Amino acid sequence: MAAVFVVLHHAYRLLWVGTELPELASRNVVPWWITSPLGVLDFGRQAVLLFFILSGFCIHYRQAVQLAVVMPGRPVRMPDWYGFARRRITRLYPTLILALAFTALVDHIGMAVNPALYASGTGWPAEVRLWLTVAPYGFVVLLANIAMQAGLSAPWLGTNSPLWSLAYEFWFYVSYPTIFWLSSRYGPGRMFRCILVVSLIGSLVFGVAGGWLARVSAYWFLWCGGGFGGRGIRGPGAIERDSMARPGICTHAAWGGR
View 1 (cartoon, rainbow, N blue to C red):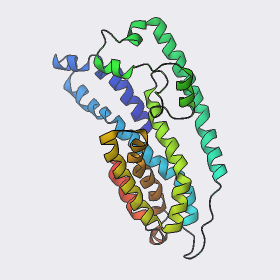
View 2 (view 1 turned 135 degrees about the vertical axis):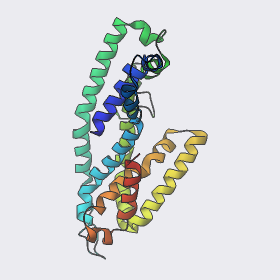
View 3 (view 1 turned 90 degrees about the vertical axis):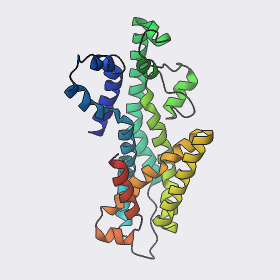
View 4 (view 1 turned 90 degrees about the horizontal axis):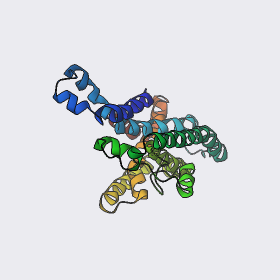
């Protein structure tokens, strides 16, 4: 449902709001009972934040099953990180390569049919020009997108701006083994508090100086909050053994409803 919502958000912004909806609404061509409910589709970015929470939840739940039954004082067996990386690669890369190929095909067809739109967007509303900004189709850009770094170290490929969120997911995945080890060694409560501090610092640094690392760090606690919240649904016993579950669930509830 969240994926469908994001697709509708992009279609709504490009095909309706970005073209004629405000003008038509002001002339009462489109009745208010159609334009007003569609305003909910403006919250596409919030839906992506929900994706981050759900991603952390799904990634960590498998390990949460193991942690929920570990007795106090017993060592935690580390997951198979090679298998973890292999599953992420095999799940993401086929879809990513297909999406990049389809983006290139559609963009080049569009540039052939309407080169003025892709060149400068002259005559089109600002909303459409913003969303249809075409990044250069160079080797470095292609390599960065294949490496899941779109929007961070290089622009996204063509007009496929939603690829920015995949770059964040990449770094969340990379940081997960370290988070898991520190959490099992020093306690999930301490680890989560540290993550909140890092995210707060990242938000402040990004607001002042920018930078992709600060930008990713600002969203880090969302992903980790969803992941640690996965422990809370293991039942009352799991919550008692894992103090991380309580702040994780609170984070999940607070951000999932926005």
